[in-house]
Every structure is written in C-alpha cells, then in structure tokens.
Amino acid sequence: MDRIQAMQIFVQVVTQGSYSRAATLMGVPRAAATQAVQQLEARLGVRLLNRTTRHVSLTLDGDLYFQRCQVILGDLEDTEATFRAGRTLPKGRLRVDMPGALGRLLVIPALPEFTRRYPDITLELGVRDRTVDLIREGVDCVLRAGDISDTSLVCRPVGVLEQITAASPDYLKRHGTPLTPQEIGSGHRMVGYLSSRTGRPYDLDFVEGGILSHASPPVTVTVSDAGAYIASGVAGYGLVQGPRYHLDPLIASGQMTEVLSGFRPPAMPLSVLYPPGRHRLPRLRVFIDWLCAALAPATASPASIAAE
Image (cartoon, rainbow, N blue to C red):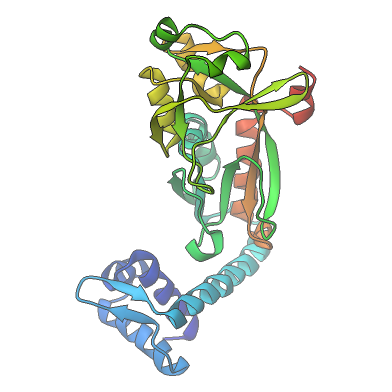
C-alpha cells in the first residue's frame, strides 16, 4: 500500500473513530486499514493512535500528524481539481459548518437548487451554534454571523443581517410594551443567551441617534442555543433580539411582537470563512458563490442599513 493511501486511511480512521467504518469508506478490508496505520507508525517511529476494543483516539504525535495529513491530502486534491476544472463539473465531498438557525431557515431550504446544479458534490453540513476549528476538524468553510477575529482564515463578507427586538404578546400583556430602551430597566426581563467567549449572557443592544447603548434586565431563563433562545421568547420569558429572518415568521403568525422598532440593535455581519489556499478547490468556489447569492434576499449591505 502506498503512503498516500495509508495517510487517507489514517485520516478516515480518526474522522470515523473506527477502523471498520474507515475500511468500508475506503473500500478495503478492515485488516488492511489496521495494517496501514501500523505501517505509518513503524515508518514514523511513534504511536499515532490509542486503541481500545471500542474506540480509537489520537496521541499527541498522532494529533500533529493528523493535521499535517489533512493539509497534504487537501493540497493534493486541490492540485488535481485545478487541472480538471473546466472539463467536468466539480465533484467530491464538501464539509460546511453554519449556525443552526441560519442552516435550518435559510440555507437548507435553498439547497435543492445547488444539488441540482452540481449533482456530484456531496455536502456534509454541520448545523450547530458551536465554533469549529476548520483545520483541526477538516472543515472546508464556515458561515459565521458576527464580528470576525480569526485572522488566520480568509473572510468573504456576505452582507449584514438586520436585527430586531421582540417579545410574546403574553409577556407584553404582563409587563407592558417598552417605548424606549430606558424603560427596560423598570419591570422588564430578558431571555439570557450565553456568550461562548465570556460564559455570560449577552446584553440587549440598541442604536439611538447613531449611539450604541446596552441594557441587561433580569433573567429567568438562560440558554446557549439560538433556537432555544427564540423559543424561550415565544414562551413568554422576556425580551429577545435576533435576525429579522428568524423573527418575522413568528411576528406574522402572532406568536411574537416587535418592540422598540426605532431603537434596533446593530446589524450583524455575515461572512464565509475558509483556510488560505482552499479557494483553488472548484467545489468550494462554486459553493461559496452559490451561498452568497442564495443568502442575498435575507441580507443587506452595511451602507443600506446605515442609511435607514
């Protein structure tokens, strides 16, 4: 077995957490998968995996080698794809990660058009609110909302998401409808949404006359998932703030009511991030182009938001 195939098997063993599943995906006997990893370990002179009867895990050396294998195999695939580009439609697996609500409400409903256009691209979607490590987890690109601080990744801006403040009719009946942000400090509550960075709930943010202000009324329920956050607002636990695309359907159905429309939160930037060099991969290029076009109806340019 050549070294490239052995590296591919090793990466699949780590990704799948199983020799059997990796062997099935690679189309080789399980014994061949085991032998491939053993040959790599013998060549390198280090142990790559800790093995039990039910699970495999990376050693420290194995973790470093796994990361390098992903880069090497990715570069090899990119090189081959570059020479195939223009002669065939892009094909292969594409791993994409995105926030849960964005994925469920905007991206997945539009995906059939992409898969009809590119039937040979297989998508593996991570739809969650956890921030992933693209290099470590082998993800090709991520869709992220909010300010971007990771300068090691290439950032392609998609647009901005308009945000609004809302509450359930039942909550407003019990607590009254605030007319200014200052009124929130008297008798109002908010649903807490935990920041993964600080571990504390985000404040409510408002822009008044170009000036940003914050409010942090008492919290009864705190969550760490965007879907649960909005659901807690529908259940009457307090004021929530979120993208218009998420709240508008609930407002239209009568489950939520927009408040403080003259003091909306700052618009939220939306970006696609990917590791340097990955743009050469044709299937990634066509997906990012499609994604930006598909999200255009739900986003706006920063200038258009500022002009309102």
